[in-house]
Image 1: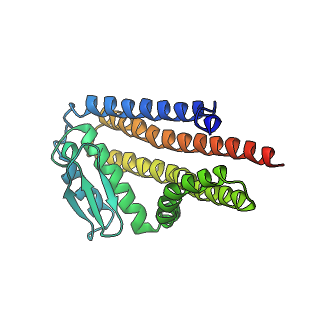
Image 2 (image 1 turned 90 degrees about the vertical axis):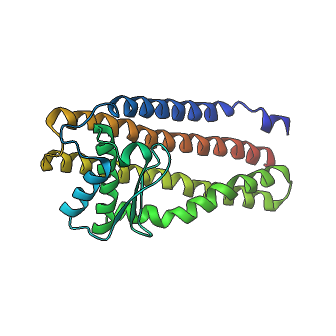
Length: 235
């Protein structure tokens, strides 16, 4: 019991947490900087989103205002594009960039972008796996029977599903950002220097997804180390 609570593999968890904190601080800093820069066009996040959706022939997606800071998202279930307080009514370069990114997800959905469909299918599996994996593994580590190995293996499989979700998220987010930059540049909504600033905002945001995937992989590695040691002790 003491070993499992104070084992050295906790360093992997600490590294994952630090990576996520650094990425989160970075995106807040960059977004905060460019949220103070008003776009030349004067478009708000809502107006930019509506224009981008129309340019892509999408008329059944509603752009709605949601509370919070950087809580922006596209929901394919009810076809709504939610823009947060700092994006919906703001005419900043950062707001337009974030709005365009979320429109990228709406376009992905309309086009049947495969990684987005895979990620959507993985959502219930990942949620179930992340909540049930650790209890199964802990029970498997605490009991001494043939069932323990089965519980541990099942827990690792479930947690691996959550890691897979994080990995599939990466191409989805990178693709959405690429679409955002392309449409903002080609449409003339933003000027050349403003497009460069949007790239910085979206690049910082992308780091949070990379950090999330890295943290999940480190946790999976820790699980494999811990359970591998248990198997060697049982032999």
